[in-house]
Image (cartoon, rainbow, N blue to C red; front, side):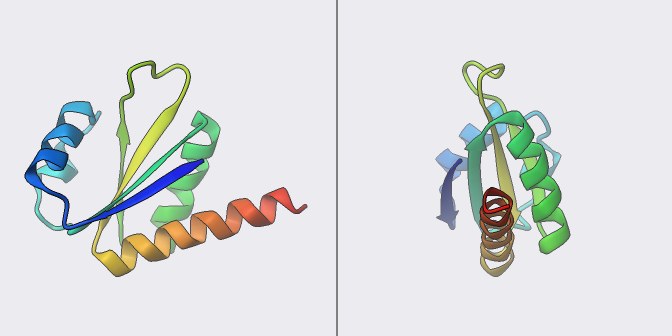
Length: 100
């Protein structure tokens, strides 16, 4: 799984996300100042979405790739603390699952 966090995303980043998003309604609002980008297997992205939404006050949007059948990406949107909390919880839970 690859993870990047963008604080105060530029208009260019927001435009790119809008172009690749399957749902622009969250991206239309300016109620987020941080974007967590997480890329991995589809099954991982579904689990990560569930973990993120339960862990913090964030919205999660699926992002289309060039070859969507081979990888998936989600954008975790919210304030900086909430996105950081959601991403940390995802990392923790995936780490725990590997150690079982």
